[in-house]
Length: 303
Image (cartoon, rainbow, N blue to C red; front, side):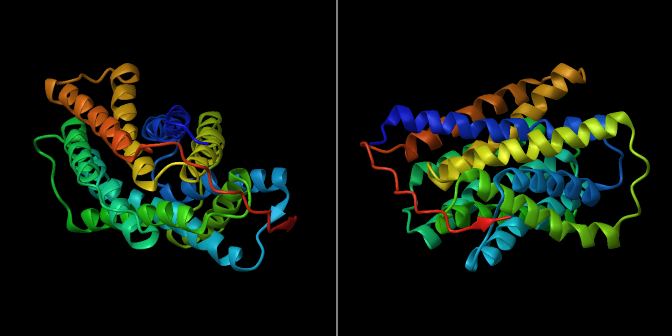
């Protein structure tokens, strides 16, 4: 039987992933060469996926080949590509605020694909979270670029679909194997895009190698293992709301490591984001102990 205490333990473990993702901006700007976003995204996904695939020694079978590449595109390839387009064309605050619409999209998709009811308080929590992110990262002179806004929305929709479908399809393997499939597929899809659209990466420095290793091993392999584990145990809407923690961590790192100041509006944004996450988890918390879904037998073959 799954108790509320166990549910909150699963939420806390899942929350580690978006919290670590909040360090991506700091690592990217401090350790990686600028101007190679798709190449960096590919190097973040593919080596990590291949390493996990080497460890688990399992390949998809049957429909899971198509599903692995579909989810790899939604959660990694297309999502990261749109994220970078949005980041390049919009001020960081605007890009983060546009992306913060994702939990609301997940709520709608959960109704469509999973038959989950749309809870009024969950929608309120999503709106509070978006407002909190806006206070955290928006500046008074932030400008809007239509292409950047469209890319940010497309990225949010892509990740939302990936989040809901990861739960809808319930893979017949462990979270570790499921993560290896998606990371590898997403990295493979990024290879031709990066090759065609970007120049060759210059000889990497030690800092570049350390940055890519961190983004791949910690920011991708480890965090997405926690993320997909969480999606198998908690509601997608509850998991999506944890994404609000990323701009919180990014802002805190800017304050601690880069000497950036915190305004009263940003402090209010912190409070709103944390209140949003808390309200969302309380809304989605099981009212009584529930039995976890039975784990199906693995349907894969050794590499």
